Length: 354
Image 1 (cartoon, rainbow, N blue to C red):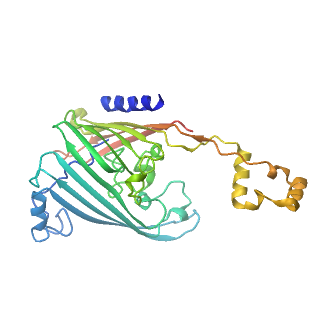
Image 2 (cartoon, rainbow, N blue to C red):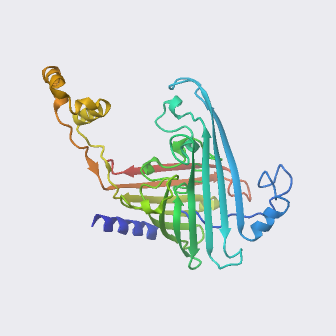
């Protein structure tokens, strides 16, 4: 019954309010031109890129390089260099001469170098890109392999390996390439239990211009480096829904976003017996305590009897949910340039806390 209620919640959110991440990309009249103003550094590739764009094929290779240091405090006052290479392919089946309404998106990421996370001592990474394609160290992974098919002008379905980086979109605080680098200003941290990428599928609704609603079922344990579709949904499901609506009070562009998710994946609970946690940690660090033998057992009985109390399995939860909200609003924009100016943004999220 819990899963049915969660699905009902997802459909309700879909009905009342995440973006269609595989929609066609903007294609300029030419990728070439003056080096200072061309859309891409490498230009039109002798006209080949322009020809591919007209046929609905757009290939991008980007390199994000970050030099960061700890000026004072933290764990270690050092400077590090971190890089993230991104390769993205978008295909529009209609422009390719196949069938209308089909869009393919493929994206891979490769990270290299050293990040500042450990040296900073921060709870949240000062560099969101350093968590990609997976938190840890250097890695190469598949973030997106998604096919979307629109059944009409307003309804589409998608299936594949879905990137979660498009969730919680915000005009001022969402793109680590051009906006803030800190993790706390890229995604709502109530989404901490959601994977960056996962196999799954869902539905997209575009009921009117400027409104995008999605609902999806995803593998809660998806990773960029695990491409085995046979592993998907082995330990549960993640149901998500998100809606984003464009508003224009006084002619100034803004957005309102509401989303949420529920998962039945079993996880370690935050509610635990502290003494049991302590004994569990000690047993993991000193396995001899699990079977101390007669001599050590007599010593522990005399001086540390609490260490002989058997550890109990950690409490676990198989029901977790989160709801998040954000808005962005321009307060001033230059005449004729609605996506530039001065504005404000806000984020809020809540979870079950377990």
